[in-house]
Length: 260
Image (tube, rainbow, N blue to C red; front, top):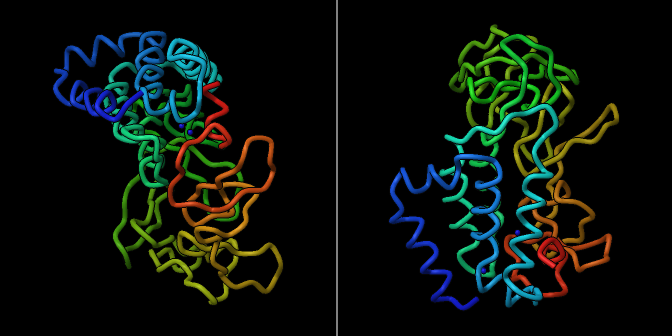
C-alpha cells in the first residue's frame, strides 16, 4: 500500500470504465491474473516515463511479483473483490501525480482482496486474521493488543455501545466507563489510551498527554504515521522525508524504486 503519455493513461481509465462485469471478473479470476492486471494498470506510460523504468515489461514483471508476494500469510484470494480494487488503482494512477486520498482509497478498497482464516469470535491482532469475506473485522478493545473477529455493529454518536462488536461511527469512540459513543479528543485536550485523539492527531505514552497535530505537508517525517496525510515522501536511499498531500513521481523518489 505507487503510467507513457497522458492520452494512454486516459485510455486506460476509459477501458476500465467501459469494461463490463464479465471482463473485469475474468481479469480477477485467479491471484496470478489479478496481479498481472494490477501491474499493467500501475505501469502505464506516465509511471514508466516519470520513474525512468527500463521498459513497461520490466515494470509489469516487478509489480506483478510484488503483488503476489504481498498476499498476507494465511489468507486466501477473493476474486469477487478484485474488480473494485482494479478500478481504485486505475483512478489513483491516472497520472504520475499520486495523491494521499487516492492511495488511501486503494488501501481501503483493496483490503478485501484477501481474506483470513479466523471465524467469528476467533482471536486476532489484525484484520487479516479474520475472514474478511464474511464481513468480519478484528475488533480490539481500547487499551488492549488482541481482539476478536466480529462483524462490526456501527453505533451513532451518543449511542450506547455495550456490545463487544459495537463500533462508534465517525470521530467517536466507545468510552469504557460509560459505554457510550463520545467524541474523540481534539487538539490540545487531555488524551490517553482510553481517550483517543481525533484523526490527524497523536497522544504521547506518558501519564499527562494532550493531542498534538501530526505533520502537515512540508513537515519532516520518518514514516507515514508521522503525517496527517499518512504520506511521507522520501528520496531513494533517504530515511527522512517530508509529509505530503501528493507526490509527483520522479526517478529520484522512493516510490519509484518499486517499479525499477
